[in-house]
Length: 195
Image (tube, rainbow, N blue to C red; front, side, top):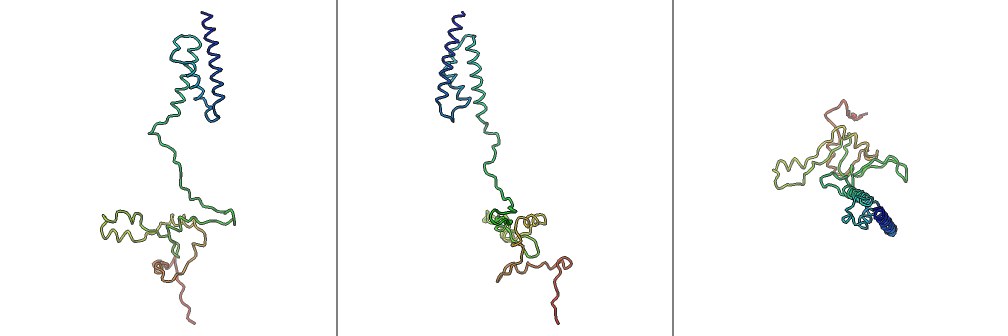
């Protein structure tokens, strides 16, 4: 009995040494625990070990480690995966070249600032499913909307002072809306001076 155990232990030592040498000869990327377990389990022929000696205990432990690693590597399809790309429009306060704040271009492309400080935008989804919208809804979707106070403050922070200055264009379609006329106490107009 002792001789059989000694023979089994020497055989395992030789097989283990062969497995380790196989793992050393493998490329650097494949040198992880799962490949080592796979090499050990292949070399020991776990399915043929039916005795209750030390070799079967070691082979059972290697098999258990290998199955645990496989279960960790396989991920359920129902688990939420982390997003690969997240849109970031961070404000740059100091640019690399000149050390000045930068404007976020998405704001100037999508919004327009009137002279009295409010930002306007177009109706979202105005080009979608026009065939099923009524005439009045199509007309309303062509109108512009005001941003609220919180949004206007945020958009002011995202743009530089260049975009806050009033501009004068020829045949400007927004010219009638550049002045706020219904609140004279907050937006007073200078009276013309006649000498």
